[in-house]
Length: 300
Length: 300
Image (cartoon, rainbow over all chains, first blue to last red):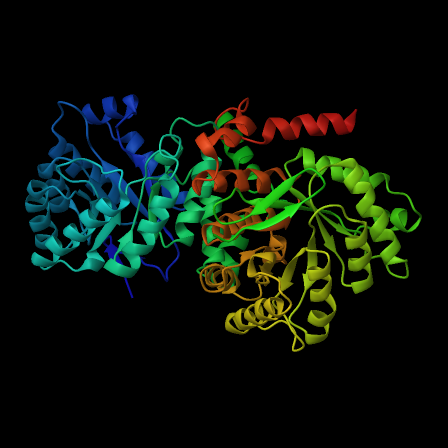
């Protein structure tokens, strides 16, 4: 059985095909969020704290923390953000950076077994990141591009995944500690993008024995009504073996679809999570009363 | 390639894994619809006509027509309903009855190549229905129960599907003209019901070379918020090879999910159907403006 075990000081999350789907909250990321970037650079973490609380309340099992702010001291900001999030909520963290020094600083500050986001198939990157994963006994998200970029050919992306898994094994890291991101292309540009990913997800699970994750929203880039497209994509990806995703759990449609997919995969025992989430809501309009309540709170 | 070709006088629908998903409108069915049953028994087909028009307008590719009214002359009603629906809309029809004489009367009245709903794995039923399928050059929905009832064991249901396919071949009917219904159990009662069906769908496609259909709503029986459960189930079933379903296309969430699944399967060329259906709607709230418009119409 493929199980990726991630932990905080007090909480363990197991990513795996026989487990409920793992929701990794994506919000703590200054990329494209100007106010958050400005605040974090100015040592103001109020929004980091409120985003952490809101995502966990909305059902995030883990939180992604990214500190990628241009010209800022990313390693220092990462360490501070990690400590603050860990003192605010008890869920495990995905330490997210393209800067190796920031990953190390995050790992140094982190208590528990972290998920590191990410390594690619580039040799330089593998040689820099994998020793850290081994040293800190972490797990790692592996993105299936390499020196040649992102291949449109899913077989090439599979080969990159295979390369990363093997290289990790050379460093003594188990395939269970490598979570593969098969990379989701916009289906508006590449008509076969969805099916490519579905096939890759099956192959990664059966042939490589690894868990998978993805940022789902890219699939709908450039199309109208992105939310139902993203939700449908996630349901279909889960049906093909996807075991986690980096998403915004505050999007009610995404959250609801993931809960429903857990029911359909037999991962919601006696449908208790579904019933709890939908107890007071009339048939077919789940999520709405809660939204109304939230809006009322915001007004007051 | 598995292709089930169904036609009306002027329109052909091809059910198949490389085609857009086939929506079979379920509404023209007096079971559980007292007003409709009363009207049809009294030779009033106004609601049949309006249901036909509404479902086709909402995107149904085919219509299921059932005339199962207790104590009524079902063969006569079936013939009349089939003729009326064929003179109202041009989509192909699924002739739906548990009474063999009503199926024959419907086939006699039908112009084109019909889908017959249904045969089971019961010997008596196979011997009565399959000769009709051959005689009228129709296709048939095969339900995976037999004399012993509906098995909880998906392997038994697969074996029933296999038996029906073989028996059909004995009558000179191609596997492409047998559309298998793997039977969906309520997931609230059988926790593994969803996964059972997903596996069956794959096996039916790869091992039997047949198309599939199902009535999806049974999956959510007894649970709250049934619509998002049904929609998620359909998306996941399509990801596992389901090629058609008998559903209500007037349910916006179901229709939207099927369109999104077509996009994800690469069956909506350049996403044109998705863009057309969602053109005027703001991001993330697809379906709502249309619902509001409908409600306004109903009030006026």
